[in-house]
Length: 580
Image (cartoon, rainbow, N blue to C red; front, side, top):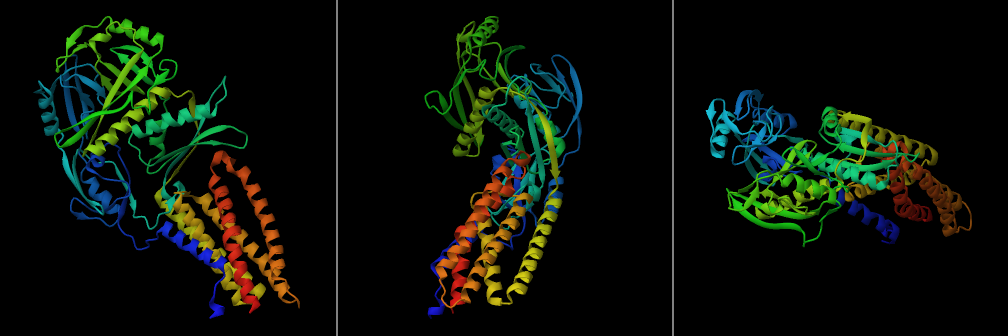
């Protein structure tokens, strides 16, 4: 029985392997398709669809593959239709699919324009020859011209249903077989490396942080959910911004980041202030006394919540506000309040994102404190509150950062298809298997002993499992650089095991063996190699603007796990085998 007793170092290794497997949570037989991303605030999101859901059926058609899902989704596509819009200014003719391309208020005044050719502030009088006199007429006519189709999705978390015009933007992939997060090299998508252009000033860390905030806000505005943005510095100290977006083409990314983020507040055609510290020195944030969700209500089966926060504008902006509002008329709102005849409109990249009424008491006022409000909508009260908080944070970020402080240049743009990513995975597994077999062959030829070979192979496999478990635990994205690092880290582990073996085997031939001294001698060499390896990886942290950071991280994590976990356990096993 004594021979079956394992050393404490081996039990520690076994415990870490168990924890790693729990973190990885391998499910090799998982089938179906999994939701990767969808439009934020779209019909599917409001209905309760969540990232990571497994789709079982779409419109009562069983779904087993991505192709089947996309085939069923394509059936929802609407053919182009000609729309003739007559306003109080002009008549417009254009083609649409999913929507009419503009939004109106209760007075049929156009508030925002997307794809339509008309201008804001015009009033809609008819659609395709059908007169519309109120908002109900407008909605009924649009529904008749562009009818909504019902979408029923059965997922592992329940059934959802919603109405939509055209094909909803839902991106799916094969169901995940573990908790490991695949990087863009393996999952597919687009990676873009941006370089801030600054001619007369230095780009600081704060500037990079501001750029990242504005870009995050902009990408979220466009409904992208699977986005990773981080700062990066190359070996020369030059600053970059690295953006990884799953499921988006190179052309779409170019369109999203081609323009410099610009925020403007307009009253009529007059710009009152723009985003940024110059015009808005203070934005109340994370302070319940001047920022937060104020009230919620239910309407038409949905919940709505209103947020409000205070901003302070500069004296110059207050002067502009006073001059513009002084020329406006006082009218009565639907709720009986006295308001000014124009709204204050907020634009992001020339796109209207919000429009607020102006109280009559602000006419000609040089006030520097302005209350900004908005709302969030959800299926229930909690989701509406969260939507309101998200919208408030988005608007606050825009007001704080304003336009991008610098123009951005695309330094590198890569697009990887999911198919190419699957080839990468297969090739990586094949290379890893070949490397493992080659190492096993060399070790067997060198030592001619199965009792040496088997512990070495098992130790290397345990090291791989623990590295992957650590990656799953911290949601670390595994890309090709990281996989190369794992292979290299395990290779250094084999080197260290050979050092331990040689010390133990040479010691076992001596008449008087000092095992502790032999193991200590081996670990002196191992720790020296460990320190050298970690020191060599530090310069690679920012090499290539951080594009191979995964390689450096994996090497450091891998050799650290090896030195403090797998090498001591291997030494204990070898010591026990050669003592017997």
